[in-house]
Length: 238
Length: 292
Image 1 (cartoon, each protein chain N blue to C red):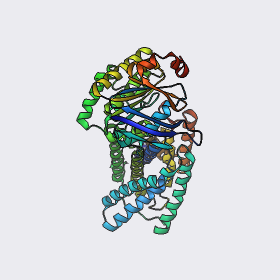
Image 2: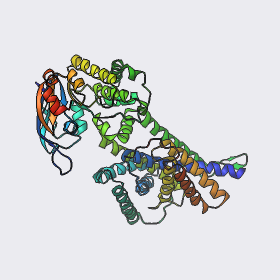
Image 3: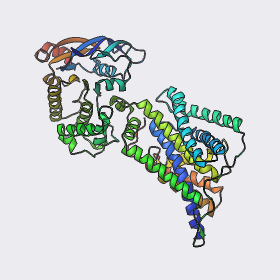
């Protein structure tokens, strides 16, 4: 059973050539898929289009069989498709606690929400220590943790993660990906993880999809991709 | 000294109304990133509704509630019907449409109700209490202060303590992130407009009985001063609107009393100029202001 399916997806900005042209992919339920590719490959555009932030020129997006194509971003989120966007998506004017509560408002009633927030504090101890700190005082690692915790709080069926390692120290990246791997294994969460940090991403994922110029150029088990030097040189630049 | 006490207490009541109207401008600014130049005309329209209901029922309170409700409805309707349809990320269309709305509303009100001033009776006496031989606040001034404080306190609780308020703030600060968290941002923007225009309507309702009377332009001067207050306090800052409103109210009252009424607008403009020169973001603006 596929948790997330999209096909014929074409997305572009303005009147220019499409960034993504007729892209399709099936992501199996409970799997972690790494979406790899160099700068400009279309990873961010793809994830934003799946979340409904960029209008698609054509194509359909299905979540657990339900058609999301015509839904607004907030309704896609409420259907179980969460995106943690690239960079620091924390609302910096709100505190850590407010950011977390905001993530669970539509999902949980007051008491369950409190429990869910506490669960996230247990999962991310550094956030627990900074509950009442304003968002703008957080470090890059803390912000990324908060963004991930906030998305997990709403118990999505499919989580789209855009470059969680961007600008983070290697240790912070390892910690973040560790929590992600453990959570996915525990809850059966489906994850589509866009990363430039190929080693990190392939250590979490079981399947890797390589994008180049908006098209899929490779779709293989993560271990094969990690072991294929030719592919790495050609598309991933190392 | 007696004179100072009288002018000071009169200034407080005036300042409370200014603060309330400035707060309404801040709410719209935070929700939609536009300065609503039509706020005065919209508030005046709501006051006409209140006036009609008070005239029909004889109850000031029924009129007050009608004024608040029609302000909220008008705010929501203008946002849904007009402002939402404008191109985003450009301030000019919003300003031009708002100015057009001012003309339509004020002309419409004048056609429907006539351009004359209709006296509005306050629910409480305007004769000041005399304490130790010194005239201080009137019962109506006191009512104004209490009503303004209650509404500001209520709004502070709504924005600061409730889930709805959390969504309103998040939607204002970071619309895209909020949508990714399932917040219905367009609804929050509509709600922000409704709250703002209801607040503006209350400020106008409190002001009109102390002035010449109801007229399509009854809230225009209030808007001009409240706009100055909002900019002085920082357009993003509700606390700034409150403090700057009280400050400007006192300034106007004292300058009117000790110098002349003609000098009061100049004093407000001088203060505005000074603030814009020294702290262009407003006295109480956050260090890192969002531009969009």
